[in-house]
Length: 395
Ligand SMILES: *Cc1c(COP(=O)(O)O)cnc(C)c1O
Image: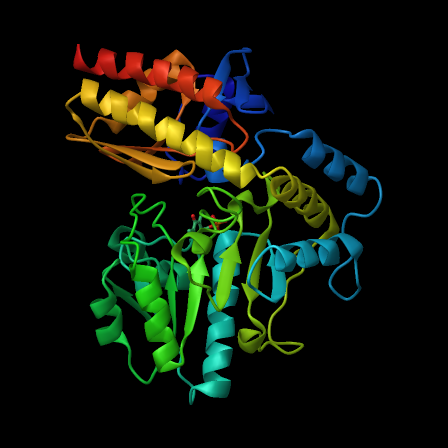
């Protein structure tokens, strides 16, 4: 164990099951450890580094802003915040933006917004229907929203007002809807929960139900948004529009930032209803503006779509070769590979030996979420390392 890893054990709360690598530098899809060993990074800060590590447009925006103005509070107008808000609205179906610092915080705000809407328009309805195997963040309320007992059990009792129902099952949403329901909150694809892709018609059916009942549809696009699934936002692939959408992860290409977006009709906050000290701070906004501008101008989502399907084809090839691979699934550059037994950690460690960083999604599944700027060459390299890693598991 390196010195740094010993320090972690000594000083850091033991909440993360870390891989034994200390990273000190990154560039594009590559990172280096303290000894100068290079890795191809298919974790990308947990689907965060959309433009890879230290992309020049992001690094320059941060450096320039850091020398100009870093934080002012929301008592004042600042320019990067408003440029970012305009860019997000111009590139989406939503009309208004609130900026915060993380995904969980964006979802908390979205639920507050939906409850506010319920107070104003639905006789005080406050319940939010969410899905089993979802992931909405780690705050107490988002733990209640996240339909995974392992995250909930240690923290009971949880805040009230969340109903977890089966994903990809419109009947389950219908039967959970009462006159206390103000919103349904879903991920377009359940990312942390298994890269679970719903039937093509599911989200349209949920949209139709919400319209019929006059309740709001909140899409958590924290992981799927900003190009990850091959379109700027995943909702575009389902032919629907949410009333509220949350973003974080890839939004700042590495810099912490989150956003709540809403249609005008759902944008019911008035001054004092919600707030944030750091939310929308100039530094994060300058970085995020530079990242999103580059992503939209250069069709990075299109690249994710092309390279993602090339990658999936390659992974399907490995599935034919190794019979213990039971499934390969994904859209764009959010991809999972599932095994017939709990070997994900061994495959992960073998990939690490080969110089490839991957994520363990479940004991029997890996997740690949590389930077969206990679090309087929990086995919070929990753497939080669993965092939050797899988071979070493069999023998
Ligand atoms: C990561 C994630 C979150 C939580 O984001 P944090 O920034 O870790 O709070 C919420 N929803 C989804 C879909 C996510 O992938």
